[in-house]
Length: 109
Length: 115
Image 1 (spheres, rainbow over the protein chains, first blue to last red):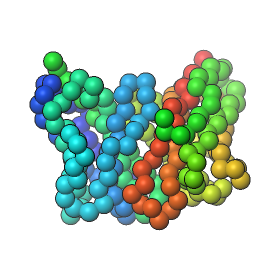
Image 2: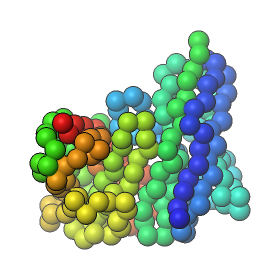
Image 3: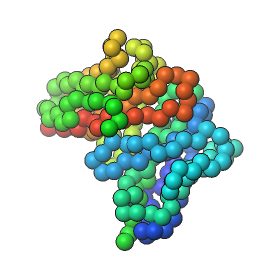
Image 4: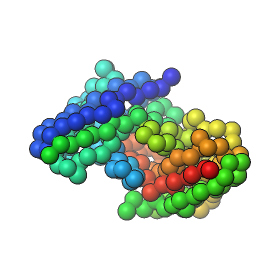
């Protein structure tokens, strides 16, 4: 079956760096994406990796290793507004976009 | 604003009833996806339409059905509702096939409460 595994919760301190990992097992692979969702809100797109390596977008970076079926989202200079749930997602060979269960990020002042 | 419109925002109904959720995709997007999100759960993929045709199906119950109309808006029909169907239902749209790095743009969701 298809599955994406990510930690259910992560806690970090304001101003610090945090990494959220994601491992996946899917039928075909056409890229790993990350989405952010604040409580009561809609998911919003953060980043996308189709090829191995690191993609940087401001304070957020995302990494992919296709050989390891693994990726991570790196958040730097954490701010209180970064408190949210973060989801990894994979587009499979049937064009389905499957999401992980999400990682709730708690930020301490 | 993602450009994806979902109506209604809230829906409260009784068990056994039927409801219809509506979604208008972002201008130019041909794909529409439906997801269910229960409390503290991830986004469960239900079904995807592309330019009016069903393209992929996930863990969608037989009591649920959907369609995409010629104007590309989509409706998700939920029937014989059960308490466990209470959830947030999201619609998302994306660019046409072939643009593989096209992200999903989500609507604000419809919160369904079954009593």
